[in-house]
Length: 411
Image (spheres, rainbow, N blue to C red):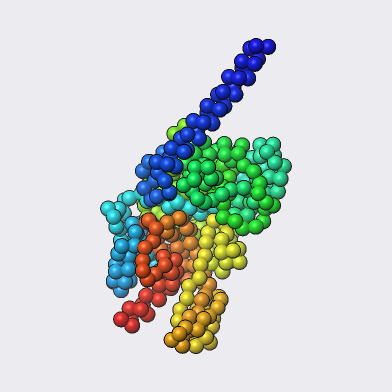
């Protein structure tokens, strides 16, 4: 009897010790490093996403007019890398703050779009079904709450899971996001630490949804997520460099699927190119065509709260003499006319939805794809600073849709 009591006591003490150690590390990381920063990849443990032997190279021919506009516009904006690629040709490339074309820059939630692509590949391989319950792949969740059975993989893809999770503020060491970002065993947070806040179906941005997808992919592919990314995307696309993916700890080595893939600006652009080309590279279908077609138009994404399968869209605008001119412009250019507003000058600003879309990360990370213009834009850096342009406005309206040309003509 005494031995049994002792074993129970010892086991309880061990569990408490492990929990406290993990929690202490999390609290320490939160206090020591504070809010998420673009240099976090320098202290976070990571694993390698290996490149292959093939190395696809974009052509390069600078657009001098665009370069004149961007060289001036990007000064002092906290940008570290900015690339514009049209028709497989780099027409603008600039690095700041001691970064260069070989630097591995963190992408934060841009990683979510990579995870979505991997889900599409895994489904094509018969490893999972987006319409299946997540408990099909993580049956242990049923022990916590039988209602987990109502959540599907598709709910996770579209941020509609209903899982209880507080995204902000990250700096509070007891929020859900802090436990994901600074925790040392985030796999256990998914398999034995989640609860449900509401029925699935309502959009609510939760990074935990993508982390659950990461654990599911790890389970069904029977390999670490970074290896699956290397095999299915990094090597086939002819990436320039090995990437790194931040993990929770050296012992657990669970990648932070919701963020923190670190790569060169050019390699992020190659991922944009993959979607621009319908998931195909060198005649080989890397991501299933049907999967890419779910999000290869901003108009499709707009009908899903502007967010679908880990991709975003936004609107752009132009100024016209009359409201009718704006509507005619939208029809002639294949854009969805959204609204118009009369300005004090008497002119009209009209807002449109085009086919362009984005992989986005906190602090202004963009992988922008514009099928109409055959254009890719990558911006990586710290939080955007500019007294005239919002970052999304600069990308969608001025560069992505050529409005800078009108501005330059007027000058």
